[in-house]
Image (cartoon, rainbow, N blue to C red; front, top):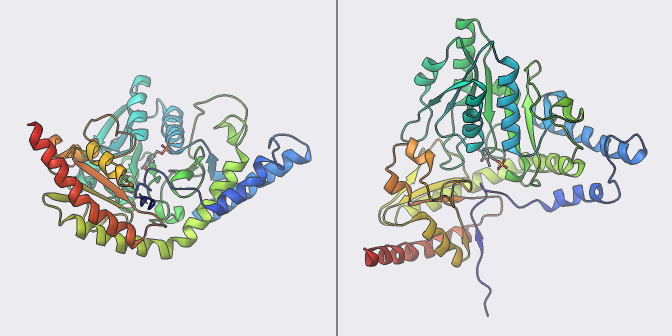
Length: 393
Ligand SMILES: *Cc1c(COP(=O)(O)O)cnc(C)c1O
């Protein structure tokens, strides 16, 4: 029997760990298993690996090693960034600003901070998912302590103008004679956008390794020197007292290696993915009543999302999965909930339509054959689902 074709187009949910990363981590699980806080040689081996990884990552991101805090995932990094900074500034200011299309990591943290007395403004986006800059500018006041935006949206792929946002924040700082901390959620952009933190003029930046070929369970927070952060978890003095608990040396080693490989390959992977994405979009737009969501040009090379009228996103995913195609509907975190994506709703898409959303996300291993296969299978599946739906109505 012929083996069923498998096409993974859900790289924005997670990326397989690079074999080189598995190899780099291997000895830190087994022979070099020491606790980095132990004074003996085994502990010191692990400590050295962490120090070297931190230095490597700092070099790749153009920041200082002391500005990097290893955490658990992007979500926990975001919690530390927003909660830690807000608590450190409580009393000086109590207002946070973010956008309506953020990942739940940001939206739920900002919402949670309301319980500690912080207020927030959620800025809207246009039909393409771009943050409304004039509303952002107007929302900043003397009480504002944090502005948080994503670098690029993980559902529709729209890139945010973070350099422009940084400029607005800095101008407002001058005008209002106050310091405002700019946080960027970079989880969806590693390998796709410029990661030179020196150039980006941000105060806080978060990312997680499993989105770029590193292991799950490790992320980092970049906090520019001088950024006040109060601990939100308590224990030992690990990670400058901001992330207590024994450091995961193997995962840290793995993240550093994955970042190195990803940034190294970006020059070849990005244009290749962009070409395949163009092919995918072109083909998808041939499907009757299918529309691309997100910005037509100002978009990540890996993420392409569509609205397909008259089909239920979840059903479509199951049928595609049956054909060996792994895709997603909106974000992995909201699917399973059967609620239309908050991102699509914020972009002005009707809830009825938002239910028929489909996200493909490409990776380094995606081939033209993969895209051809999807474009051959999908129209038939859509037709079938539309018929079923008509039948039951
Ligand atoms: C994936 C993702 C997150 C959350 O990452 P976790 O690994 O689930 O913590 C946050 N923000 C964006 C933009 C993401 O793509």
